[in-house]
Image (cartoon, rainbow, N blue to C red; front, top):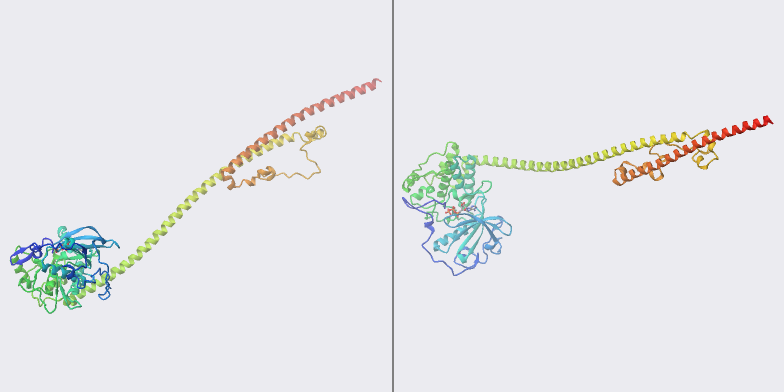
Length: 543
Ligand SMILES: Nc1ncnc2c1ncn2[C@@H]1O[C@H](COP(=O)(O)OP(=O)(O)OP(=O)(O)O)[C@@H](O)[C@H]1O
């Protein structure tokens, strides 16, 4: 029952729904205090028609009754409570997580200790009923746990993360917005399909919901209908086609109930009409300040058209459901074969197919996009690598350029010094050198033997002739030059080479001096020789 809803007890008076089910304080059964879901308790025996095979989590849709195997009964310890969703007339709903697989579910806690026998029967019927209803638009029942220590039954169900329709209607009412017509049709078609499952059961036992209202229509994350809260539904055997008890929401009460007739399948159809009307208009079709006025309106079918924004087709089908005459009101099959509904159903099918094709296309687009993103990332990384490689190369290039410049400078210097040294040595070459032959061995050193093969002269600064054996310029490759060790070795080698060159130059200078001195000595000797010769001639003359 929705909070705030009132149960019509007598014409003109209303009482809160809780009072219908809350008995005068019944004694709590504290005799048993163990928690399980199969033991022979006042609840357990009735809940389970076969105590040895406790009805277990019938999670798998494909699991047939005959194939159902006994399983370890669930216990409260198998779940973690995440939080409370809300409380209704019969208990509190909590969001829970199943420990073994993390599945999010809901349990409805209902205290049965204070219930009367008939209420307990009703609860038993609810749980047994829930087990049997397996439909994509009906809230799935999973399991139940009885905690005898606090006389509470926990009914474990599917969690509907879209909330319930009453919340959606209130939100739209608050915001002054209307729900889309397509959404209303979707609700109509899916609710009809869920009701068909209840009204036309294979075992021949129709299940009447009895409390169809927006608060009992849950939505999943895709806004699909999940018909829930069968708390007050009863199993109706076909042979007794009228159930006498009235339970439900007064605004949705059908004319036959107002006229004290029994609740039947068509009463559910009326309630569905009221609910669809409310989804469109955001308020129920029949409203009044007291029960008498409400009853009158219901009995004559006095309601306004749904807002003009909605199609005539929708208005027509809602009017059919809100037909005061039970016989003329369509059954669930009649709704399903109504031309308007069929037309709409086909349109929805087409839309759904297009959407799923669209979503498949979108999926492939997404995966394509993902693939592209991955490739882009790879390319980006490669580009980064290349850039850093390029930077490295630029540095190496710069280093090589510097080295080459230095080498050129050094080679220029070397050539300049070589020219200088050649100048020095050339000034001591020629006749003078011949003159020195035999005078001092060191003076003839370095002079080429005319018969010996000509010494190869290379002007290539890297040529091996211009380097000491261990100083081949060929060793100074670009790569070698770039290594730190080799660079320092190279500089120290050049320094050695400079020193040697200086020594050589000094030696040559000294030799030049000595040559000069020897030349003047020769001149002196020549003069002396000439003088002696003259003197000798004079002496001969005098003789
Ligand atoms: N399976 C479910 N998934 C998600 N929320 C749920 C589920 N079942 C119930 N609820 C939410 O839990 C709250 C309590 O629900 P409950 O059925 O106990 O009470 P109610 O329907 O509000 O009132 P009443 O039972 O009196 O009709 C509600 O807000 C309802 O929307």
